[in-house]
View 1 (cartoon, rainbow, N blue to C red):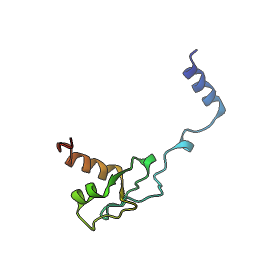
View 2 (cartoon, one colour):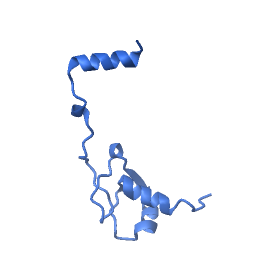
View 3 (tube, one colour):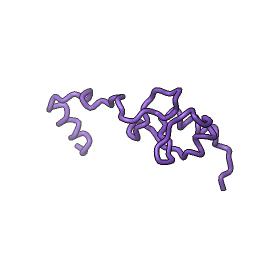
View 4 (cartoon, one colour):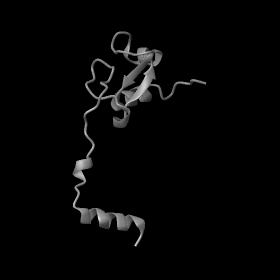
Length: 90
């Protein structure tokens, strides 16, 4: 019996539910883009962009920033990434 099988067996015997460790969708930091209501926490897939990158994507005044960085949710980051995929930065 391997270590994973042994862990599964002891987990089943203890009677604990996997639902108690389910990922909650409650975060601490909201996405800085004003049209978005999702969470920008790192554990929920959020990222931070520079102020200049966010200005190019969403325009001035359509987001909030702190210390030159803009916290965005996963979907906003993916849209920014897709938009800037072909830009040559080097």
